[in-house]
Length: 107
Image (cartoon, helix red, strand yellow):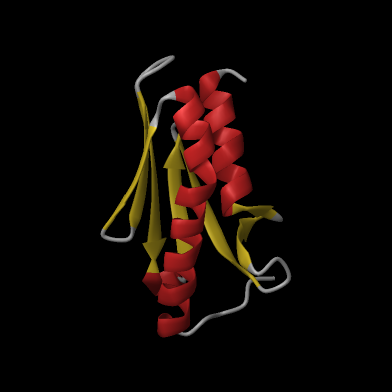
């Protein structure tokens, strides 16, 4: 069950999670030649191959979730105190983004 965070807690944890996701994706991005960038607290993952695609990862403070738009789907991750990260069905933000990147790349 998701733990309700205060807004300052949410902002801090969301910033850490998004930056952690950026760092975690960088080795794969370097190997597979896609772009990973954070601007204004929003993570963008942009692919040119095998087809153009963009993943957007953004905090949604009113509902205390991180929202991911990728591969024509929307994922809404809540804070998991058990996993100490934002997760959807026990899949962490990093695991979700890595899985989706591999899926887009056909791996």
